[in-house]
Image (tube, rainbow, N blue to C red; front, side, top):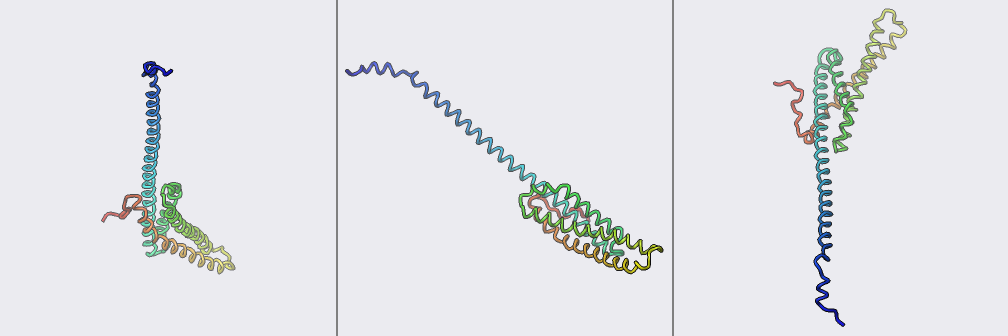
Length: 213
């Protein structure tokens, strides 16, 4: 016997379909959670991108200023080296000033990793090493030269050792001059490295440290 159609209609009640509304609400919550997560990740990535670029810019500005200052100091030292006593007090003071700039670099060397270009980082670090090593050799040789010269001036210095001391003095002076020349030769490469930093720093280092005309 077929069921009465009216009985079927009585079983199809609106409250029987309430679960559809609940399901729609759950999907809305789920979709909202996904969108919030994606938005949070996008905001974090964007913030990280701008922070990374900001740190790279600051690092480029810092190393550009250090290298430019180092270059100008060495230029002044080279100018004084060519006048009068090659390694007189003024020249040595300027060379020590250059060493202090290198010390500033050493204290902030970790900042170098804020630059994203690994080759540029390597060039900067190698450049500093190629300037610092012979520069330290100049200071070491100069200290030994002073000691030997003091010995030779002493009336109590044994004559038997005088010839040997004089020969050593010549070698030390040659070593000092060679270290100085290598330092100045390497310093000529500073400007090219600074030019590489300028786009990252968004700044031109021309004129930095120069006296106004």
